[in-house]
Image (cartoon, rainbow, N blue to C red; front, side, top):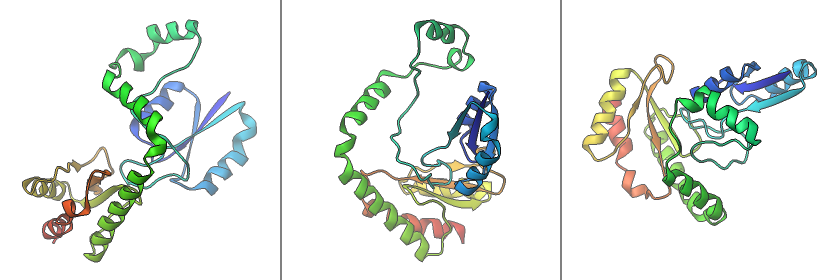
Length: 214
């Protein structure tokens, strides 16, 4: 028998994959390793195989699990020819999807080949992200996350849309995230920063947020 230990905040595509597996699934509290340990101590002996499933950076809240990770787009299966042919002809989640575009495959290869050379980019991204969070904090703007994903929760759907349009008017593309993607009263604008951004490019954003949320 197989058991899957899944973080309660995992994204919907992970949840769908777990449902398709038909394995027993137990949810552990978000980023709560003691809760996970308790579940394992209580249930591990009942299963031949246990998989622990979590995201690396949680895309809606911008926090992260305590792991090293290399992320990209898509997934693949290494298996025998017999099982490969079976999956191609019977796997619902494969039949009703589209193949990875060649640009995504080439990008994956590029990242794997050059990841060790990106430390300068990562340091810059952390620096810009910290500066943006500090600016929000100084203006008492509530935000989530400790990564380059920085959600500003507006709670109201209408306020999230209003803020998105205001930012767009000033040249910033940031879409509103609303239920059912997030829980009720947790609508937000999710800022996802990259290492190509200089802080001077976004230094006006906290003031724009503040003017909308007042």
